[in-house]
Length: 328
Length: 269
Image (spheres, chains in turn brown, cyan):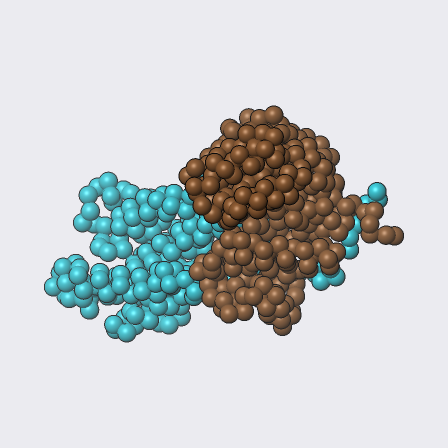
């Protein structure tokens, strides 16, 4: 029995309706043991509904799913024994200290008092929460709170972990910390289902990706395949002297063959490219012209751009949600 | 691809009385929260003291008709005991609603624990909260000179009955807490019900001075019977009728609201 060809999470034809709104319209997914599936999509796409069903918090209206070989409806108790859940829901108790939260979960899982305490200590240390461990969780920063959420879902050493937008609203440093932890868990053999609104995050962590839109899976594959489908990357050049904008624009136009857009306010020249071949040309020309730049980058398409490419429409019906999600 | 089942941890497999320990752990959580949350702690500790001192010294002289607050204390304290406990029952609903809104219940539900444990834990934890309120109020009363004139046994029985009444009544708030959208909504309804129920009764003054409609209301409300019972148990007087009416109400409240609450709970978990 090898682990590489086992399925940890499998769902067939999941449907969930809330009144007249269809949250999931027949979703199939399959996550091999020990891999990371990234589920990408804007708010309202059905990501959270799918995770709640796979986490036994919600019953599907149609279709079925197994987690670790157990049916999520008929064998919910067994599923709960092997999963960990972290996200916008499944929260810790804000009115208790981080340590007490972890001890409580240990006790609920049937650990002895001593085991619960040492497990809590271990997790606090791992997530750099030792100093804050005895403070009430309400006062934690966003990053600390997310680390505590993650620690809380790991008390029982789950083999399968659901992370619902684990880094939304975190600063880059805190985000990197969470990513590091997720990578460590995967190295230990944990299977991870991760939802996110950031293509960059899915790209950094996931072995395979699914894009949800209005309850449907609109694309799936490895990150590189999806990016290829989504097409263009963007070349950004920011001269250190705003006065050089026009000359930079001319250089980029010549190298790329397309007239770039010039953002005067941010002193940024951007042009769509299909690959990275234009980059060395631009660097050489800038050097010859003696123009210094503060930023020179090939940027991945944003979620909006992927969406546009994959679905033919922008996530335009919920622009407010996306903004809200991005700033949270 | 093949699907193999993953072994669950041995500790989670078969513990016949696991739900008891889980419920106790969650009751412990509710008690810890009171201790760590200054607002909740003040509700339980200072509010009974302030109410007693306030009503005793502000209204005591007037209501006791010249007898002064010392004469009012044996009348007021059993009534205030009822009011304090009845008011604190609404906290059960507010707390449950809050747990659902904040996702704490989803965390519990994602764990391999008995489904009913969080509910039992909430009610058990609140029983401790009610007890604390009772102890603090009675201690203040005793410090001001109150005594169980009918003997310690009857006095303690009175405390047990008022606690039992609270545990019966809390099912109303568990039910509302599970069915209403926001904690503020629960609180709003609670005040709307609690104020007429407690002030429109014999807690602060005999109902005989009140207008007819209020007397009629007091006749059908359970509160005056419970207050009469407490006064009788602590200071003497006829016990049988108020005891029977109170017990009937307790049974009725549990019979109606516990099933409603458990059905609402099942629907949400």
